Image (cartoon, rainbow, N blue to C red; front, side, top):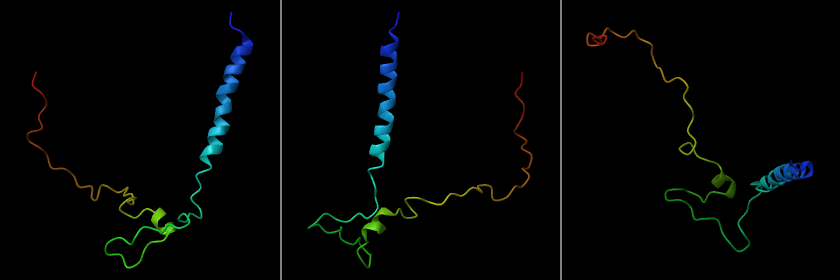
Amino acid sequence: MTNPAKSVAKHAAKYAVLPIALALAGCGASDGLEPAPGKKLPIAPYGAKATPTAKQLLLPNNQARPERSDDLLKSSDERRSDEFDLPPSN
């Protein structure tokens, strides 16, 4: 027979990991990021007029996150008949 106390302890240990994982996931805040003391932001990209700020570097551009197009079908025209679309011969 299995010991019920061991079973409860095993489940308690399993569920104790969940709050710890959630607490650690909240530690990765990206608000108010600044370069380390004595360090500078990366140089301006080629062709840019100014060096981007830390907040601008964190925002994805349109190429990294393109807009979604739900309307893939531009027009719904009737297909013309295909004389080569024949049923299989038996």
